[in-house]
Each structure stands twice: as structure tokens, then as C-alpha cells.
Image (tube, rainbow, N blue to C red; front, top):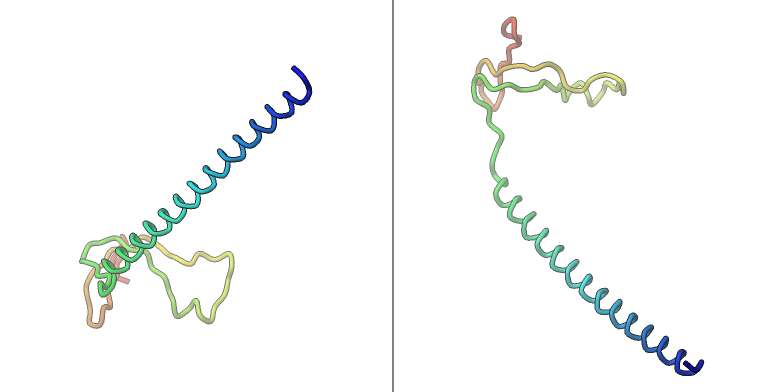
Amino acid sequence: MTERLYYLLMRQNLLTIHKHIMSIVKKIFHIKKKARLIIQKIQDYMIQQTSGKERRFIVGKEVLYHNLAKESWYSRKLELKWRGLYQIAAILLNRSYKIADQGGVL
């Protein structure tokens, strides 16, 4: 093959490769756009399903204890933020609960 013919073939191959890469890039853009729309729809659906629902516990359900009031003024980085494995012993007013450990009511 002559040098010129070789150059033309290489150029044609490079152009073909470039076109192929550009078509892949366009596809990726559309796939990314579709994925964003699907994620947004799912997030909106999840928010719609959970809005207005309050977390309610039933007697006997196992829970962890977290002292939120203490956390606001007391800072120990290495101390555990959640304690125990307690059970709901009774349901009080205003979404308050009485919890019990294995030994009895706290």
C-alpha cells in the first residue's frame, strides 16, 4: 500500500471511531436524563407516601433510647448516642411512651 492510501484508511477509521464515540456520548446524555427523571419521580412518590404519617409505636415493640435534650448541651464524641434495647411498656399522652428493659419499667 502506498503511504497516501494508508493515511486515507486511517483517517476514515478515525472518523468512524469518532462518530461512534459521539453517538455513545449522546446516548449517555439521554440515559442520564431519563435516570434523573425516574429518580425524581420515585423521590416525589416516597415523600407523598410518607408525608403526614407519624411514627407510632405499639406496646411490646423493641426500640432504642436517644436522649435528644442531653445531646444539645452535652458533647462526648466517643460516647454512645443510642442506648439499650427497650420495649414499649405503655403509651402516654402526646406521643410519649414508657419504656422498659429486661428487668422492668424505667
